[in-house]
Length: 352
Length: 257
Image (cartoon, rainbow over all chains, first blue to last red):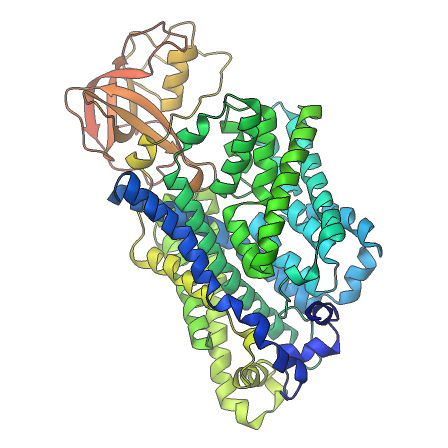
């Protein structure tokens, strides 16, 4: 019910955004879905902060240096991600206010199963890292793009755009196959996840995207753009802070040397670089340089690091939870991790 | 969340970013110098968003009652506000943005240092194929990475009996008698920091996190030019220096030493 509302971005939901006369019934229905977010972000914050604090207390006592390192890493993730988050939320605001819905229905194939790979390949055009793609995917869904296609775009865009592929080529000089493997593995993962959503996905996992209702008659497009941009940035920014805290906690509490002990076994090393990608939350434009410096690991394991990193990491999970709801984020991130690891191992096994 | 608070959040975030990137070097503690233009731009965008939001609110108060949609923005957003629709309200989690904004403005945590380096194994140095002859200057300025490759990979043993000069920060080593000269290198932001280390043997151990310039000779052991050779230096002089503004790179020591 909620979803039909959301997808029928026509006259009905328009009233939800900003009805000049507030008598419309849809406005009354809405408080229930907004109820859970009241307290759960704080639980998330606690989940992000408490384990680390506990670990410190038990492990070595809270040293000042550890706390400072935590603050530095946390702030670094936020500072690094902010410009890309702004780019993403600005794009999402612009799509919402300026792009008519028919553009997407014309560009994408009618059949969702075909729209998925097309949307995945379309990820090439978004030159940013993963923070930018979450709000954009959200506004695409709001504009009537089938969620499966929007998710394929969400997953592929940060991994296969020219900036990231160029960085990969620079980070792995003399190994063009690594660039190809990254492109293929990321595209396949994105497409598989899109189809998986078509097959198993349930729309009630998604929180309705009330914001993205498109341009309204009689409203100033620039004001709509500005307010959408601002709303999305403030919301996503809050979740970015949560994700950065979680990433910093793991980053400081679990020293790299613990993970490095697993570099010996080929299977464990793949899994551990996947875990490292989730924990480090490195931005996709730079993860190739991190991967190339992990010289103790096999090429396939490093490929896994670069495929999983842009699709699943702690700050991304927080962003997705904030944008699409946590029911979605938990299932989607888990499935994506599994699919991404499998695709990387397959593609890496063939190409590298 | 009420709109004055949104204005506050946007303006503070914008000011925080501008403070860290435009007015000071603080951002170099967290990200690479290449990010700086993007951060300055982001700071301005956020500041402008906040100011426009505040200005529109003022305007809305002026015209709101008369309800004329002539000026576009003000009346609409004002009515939206008054009717109490939660959809345009920002969830409370946005409050968390205050933390990084205030932190950047008033208490910027220091760059990563000895604590991080001590808990990491040294970065694995890539194999290098050919080695050029070393310049004749003495002491010879080297980066920590260069020194490591010379010691562990250069079969011509060019580093033997040379006095070299390197700079970095001090990481204490448990046990005493020696310490690690360290450079922390980042690929993207401080979350992916890795460190290069050279073990230094000297009479006195400088306090942790001090930046020093060290001259000395290779500390013999193992077989030079192979992995068995220790990446270590017998120090002749250890001099305190200023922290370079961009500390997250493996650079040559300052010319003056």
